[in-house]
Length: 238
Image 1 (cartoon, one colour):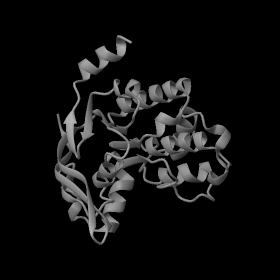
Image 2: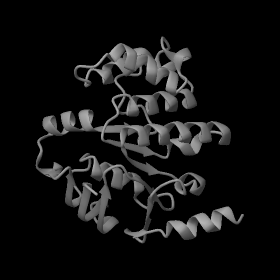
Image 3: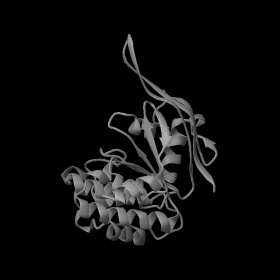
Image 4: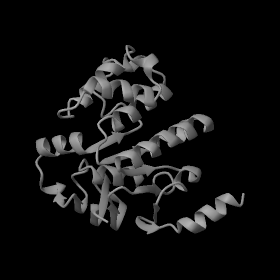
């Protein structure tokens, strides 16, 4: 399988005060392969979201190297890195970032992302993604007026709308009621398989995690791989 993300010797020390520093990550090494669904799990505050920022090149103070498609993103300047992310990585955070503006409508937000599609009917693609994520009622609604759950749906739609090689989702699915969560998970997995997307998902919900190919567990500032067969047997026995 093609190696799409390689993390080498990732570490992170947070300077809390002048005289006190907190080590968040230590000697993190892993490889994620093209088309995989990999979950990142661990207790709150263990460094999961920090690791995502490192993968995306947003955390400039961490040590180590990140390669995406054999490109060392640490060697890119900020402009090239921003363009690389926009074209290659769909991102779904809990806050408004990386959406355009809280005063934009959902329709404007999706079309802004679709501009990165070349030689395709973006209007048809727009309607397809709106229907896929069931957000037609939000088209003309400004983001600041959206409910939290509708905003999460929109962010998922934006993350997947150009079918990027990589999609990263940070805990968003955890907040939905169980039926809605299962519906969205099914939608996401269908898109992932259809477009052979590498999916990286942070979650506390093991019922979501069990659907993945692998799960990486952060504990005591470093990373371990979970035995997926053991996890599924444990969950299915409940």
